[in-house]
Amino acid sequence: MRTLYLDCAMGAAGDMLCAALLGLLPDPQKAVAELNAIGIPGVTMALEAAEKCGIRGHHFRVTVHGEEEDEHLHDHHDHDHDHDHGHHHHTTVADIEHLVRHHMTLPPAVAENVLAVFGAIAAAESRVHGRPIDQVHFHEVGTMDALADVTAACWLLHKLSPDKVAASPVHVGSGTVRCAHGVLPVPAPATAELLRGVPIYGGAIEGELCTPTGAALLANFVTDFGPLPPMTMDAVGYGMGKKDFPQANCLRAILGESGGSGDTVTALSCNLDDMTAEDVAFAMERLYDAGAVEAYTVAATMKKGRPGLVLHALCRPSDEQAVASAMLRHTATIGVRRQTMQRYTLQRETGAVTTPWGDVGYKRSHGYGAEKRKWEHDDLAAIARREGMTLNEVRAAAEKAEENGRE
Image 1 (cartoon, one colour):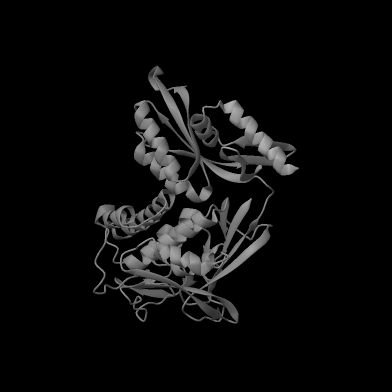
Image 2 (cartoon, one colour; image 1 turned 135 degrees about the horizontal axis):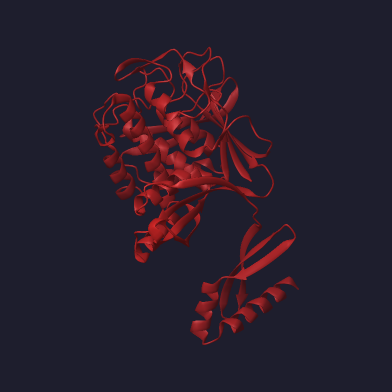
């Protein structure tokens, strides 16, 4: 199982997580260029070499209209608590959603995760300040650079596509932090709300080690908190914070294989008895957009003897929030059930053979003593239509081309 493990011994902040994830890629600078092409208004992202306590890693730098967040007023190594600058205005969840959906070029599953993370931050601020979510203004969050951190982290996790995201218990720091509202205890109230259900600890280090953005990202993507599981490491990335402490101020990301060749999926389901077939089909499309690997319905009898459907979706744990959000948003249900499952999966690979009439792609799967191969139907059908052949004739030509290739 492809596993990503986040070592949060010095907490978590959006920029540190992005730098650590970029360090796992073979060409981090190419990934940064792709991130800048997403087109967050006024934002430029860069990756710079950094060193803490003799360890080499990276720092993820975000500039908004050419300047970084003013940090001397902050007591932490991220820039999530914002003090308004000329280029920042108070931003609502609706403003963020408009930016994500209409001004940024993102895969649908990434967009849904970005909005789920910001929704969680807004809900935490709402509970702390006692005002409705739609009235929460992100003055606590340096809006555009937090948007850059969240977008980059969600995009990188989508690109790395782990089957499972795990993390250590989170070191939150100790003492106080200066925010727009004054001096608050660590963890700051919004951070504490976001870390409900997450194992945390304080320590001798004074300062805010876990920021709201870092907390929201961990809460959204991590399914298991605990020690590093047995795994074969493929890559290690170090994301450095800006401040210096006696301990190396970094978040470490480890990518590798654990627990055999199966994987973990989240199964989400809901009952539907008051939607048309067309509306259900549209909802299923949105589930796939949000990251579902499989979506299907099963006929069922509901209360009062009504015929209905049970809508099921399977997804990677890292896409669970986005898929659940899509299920609640696009169906009539008011609740979604979740279950974590282990799957046996065959190793999969794709390829193509060349016939006299064009290429035909295939998917090959193997493992557990089984071997399967399936031709791409669209390729077979395109040749059959164009050449006036039957599907079986094209299939036979593809098999002959495959045999010739093996000789």
